Amino acid sequence: MLFKDIIGHHTIKQNLIRTAQSGRISHAQLFIGPSGNGKLALAIAYAQYISCPNKTETDSCGECASCKKYQKLIHPDLHFVFPVVKTTKLKNPVSDDFSKEWREYLSSSNYHKLNDWIDSIGTGKLQGSIYTRESQEIIRKLSMKTYEAEYKVMVIWMVEMLNISSANKLLKIIEEPPPKTIFLMVSETPDKLLKTILSRTQMIQTQKINNQELSQALIANYDISQDEAVSITRLANGSYLKAETVLKSGHGDMRNFELFSQLMRLSYGTKIIELNAWVGEMVALGREKQKVFLIYALGLLRDNFMLNLVPDKQSQLVFLAQKELEFSQKFATFIHKKNIKFLNNELTKAYQHIERNGSDKIILLDMALKIVKLLRIKND
Ligand SMILES: [Zn+2]
Image 1: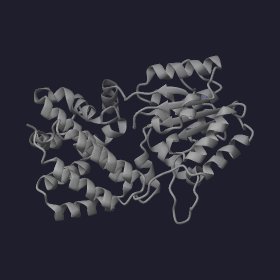
Image 2: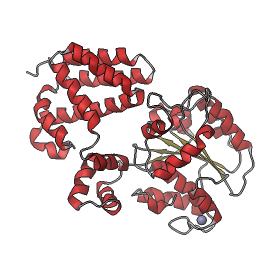
Image 3: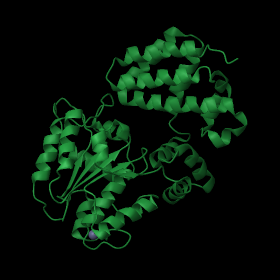
Image 4: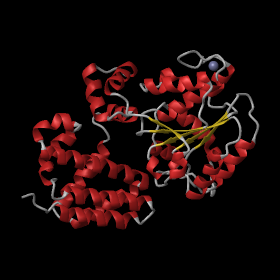
């Protein structure tokens, strides 16, 4: 992975390069930022840069033995930890059980999303996790000698998914790290991390990809016009993956929109039997997709509230695909200051309960019935 293949993040790249050039590399660093912005790729490019003996002022050489191994993700001093799923064969899985799939996944794109990764190794009904046995693996790998490079690098993707006992073990290792070891951790929700881990790492806050750079990259990578690129970029919200989804599907991830509009229409019409069927459809999708839907729905509700609040400023405040806009122009009137907070609470609560493995059927039906009531509240 070369820095030049990752869109944007110029200042961060410069700072990382400077630490490697000056030999002042912090042993525990945490890349945080939104999904799909390339932060995992940044961490890997940084590791490759540290390891490359022929590095330039701006990037790894891309030609040396170390770079070639890095490009195939097979360098013996590069280790990965990431969320995995239990299968019928693997009751107690660790990252290495999925190393082949992981390399394929990383090679397929420079932009990553937990949901896509879990879908590629699971059945779609499973949630990923970093299980307890992984901490023993981390200790085992770090106790090995360095094979070829000066440093051993351990990249931990979605470090917030470590369970509590593993997180405590990781903390101990970070406090007293083996020599010549670098931890590059990547997180999208650092507030879920142990405070003690946060306080012992150097944080690298990455941002959404800047709109102009994102649309330029889309024009370079796909056969689309400037206008198309701009309109896709407005929907992508700084995520290259979202931009690709929007591009490939015409108007963004319309499945979530269909589910959202069904839920709101049925709730408004108090169609309880149909709502029950809607819940059945959601249950069949599995938990990861239910969570994605809820995040989508929270976003669209917020946009509808804004649309209702300041209709004349809609183009500056909300980013909607054509179908979403057509629906929202009628629906926005039902989302206002008297119910937005409660609607938000209900969807957030459903998300949290699904994440904690509650019965999705009960959680979603309960949520739908609450929405029926909340849409009846008048804004006077
Ligand atoms: Zn090199």
